[in-house]
Amino acid sequence: MKVYLDNAATTPMDQEVIDAIIPVMQNNFGNPSSVHSFGRSSRAIIEKARKKVANYINAKPGEIVFTGGGTEADNMALRGAVDDLGVNHIITSEIEHHAVVDTAIAVGDKHHIKVSFVSFDDKGYVDISSLERLLAENKDKKTLVSLMHANNEIGNRLPLKRVADICKASGVYFHSDTVQTMCHYKFDVRELGIDFLTCSAHKFHGPKGIGFLYINENIQIKPIITGGAQERNVRAGTENIMGIVGLTKAMEIAFRDLEEHQNHIQGLKTYMIRKLEEIIPDLTFNGDPKGDSLYTVLNIQFPNSDMDEMLLYNFDIEGIAVSGGSACSSGSNTDSHVLKNIGADMDRPSLRFSFSKYNTIEEIDYTLKVVQELFAVKV
Ligand code: PLP
Image 1: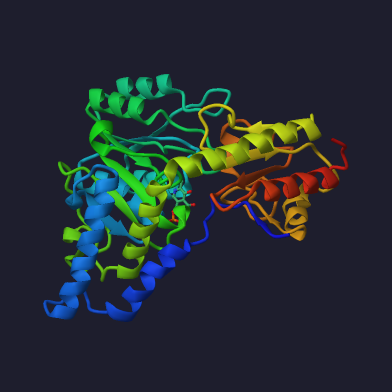
Image 2: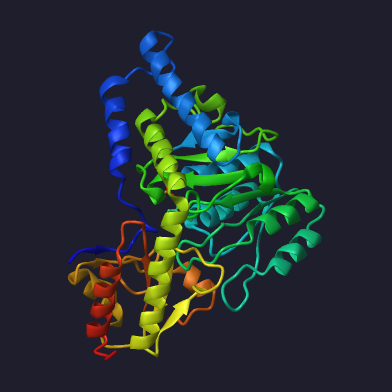
């Protein structure tokens, strides 16, 4: 049996998404910047898509900038805030995706600006009082707060509205990396009052290499990639029309069936937690999977055994695809900046299991059987 439980890394494309892209590949090759009919028809497809995408998150079409994925969108927000909005202080966390934390450090070094890090509580949630303290201590600075909505390795969620309100009250900019949560939860940017949001289509059954950055209409940033006036002068380069159509279709499907998928996936996760606790009493979880946790992610800390370094491979041999953390492919968790920073036990092997709407209870039962065999324990 082959079981794909690495959906936080990427998801398989929906057939409906593929079906939506094919005619565009066949018929719409015109450059959207061209003024002739071929170009105009490509332009019309992109603008229709932008309108649809904006609608799903209650944004205005002009607030959506299509990018080459989540990493680029994160870079655009952080670099734009420093280069164009006069930001001279970034508050972020050490468990952000590298697209944020490495970029914050890079722009901090380059422009000699201060980068501050929030702290965490014992379950790995952002300590909101540490954010408030950092804001109070740096009132003289122009600050950007960049905190992800849900962590891609452990699944802990941030109270997004609460943080947006704190940022608004403090008069600072707020960016949230919503790559793991966009199309897994509903968003209303007007109600949230947020400045930047990041999206990547391949995390919700869309194509790779396409995403968007939501930029509030009151904010104007310059492109980090220059050389053309595309995307209203914010992102140069001929638009990825196939990707844009695929992203939009994936978004449409995600929001069409959102509750059904949420319930199904949460059910798989809850079932797996309960069964794992029965079969391996010595097992624990990283983060807070029974708390305010992204329903697609379960990070398991296994007991030590003679296969610690090879655990991921052992699952792979049995046909089960899981992950050792975003920066780690070896199966050991020594590279995970997330687990290190939340104070997880780094001497024990941890693996991330992440689910999608395509996973079944039979696949979870098979995975549990493999866990049982690997650890030679009885139910
Ligand atoms: N941010 C988070 C939280 C992610 O999980 C990822 C992907 O792993 C990214 C950003 C990067 O997105 P992309 O792969 O589209 O560049």
